[in-house]
Length: 323
Image 1 (tube, helix red, strand yellow):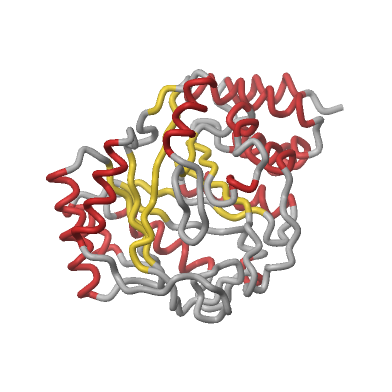
Image 2: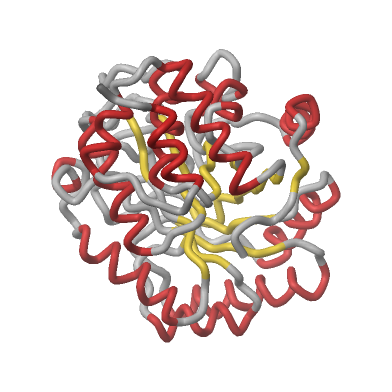
């Protein structure tokens, strides 16, 4: 007989759930599961909520064949295509977000990685942001090496984003132009350069509950403390365009189990949140305590003003977590 109280006390006492326990949690009644996950969140993270925004700094024409992505050159979508934005555009966008109360800002670019010239431009943009705007800077520039990450850290970057996307087992069904080990190598390179890492995945790609748990276990092994949980938006023109959308209950269950597996992490609702009828509110009392606000890379998001009002209603305080 599974004992929810016993396993919750185990986590509160500093223990870890096993793979078998996590899969058993996945099968528990959802309301009981989410209440316990929220209790764990409150114990480890209190009322702090980490809200961030992103800018699509370079769009489309990506060489990688990720089957979910509107920006892949392998997929036929209507996503915008444009080269790297200017430093002035990126800095202006950062300032706008800071003025709205955002504390963390991420520059995201399409492609496997950046060229040397693009790296120079992005380091200049980051330096300008750090000198002119009171906001923490993150970047998502693909599969970089340690030397490149050190350059970014010296420019003022505090965190790197690089999603695992799914489990090691299922990853070849999602992308074949780079490997799971390429992802892990880039994450470890960023950590070696002294940067914290934001890494999670996309739910609804066709993965199983086991895949979801296994990805979380890999994140735990890597020491990841900021974990985006994206819900697939099946975009026309991508191989996953006919995948069924997950439901609010699916997402509540996922974030709740992730809270048990990653008790002190920022579990961050990210892409696809706007597809939920409550925009993620029920997830924020089921274990999630972070979000990406504003527009996503190629889809419309939720305004910062709306999110801040929701967080106040739920009793959260915005702040940087897991620095």
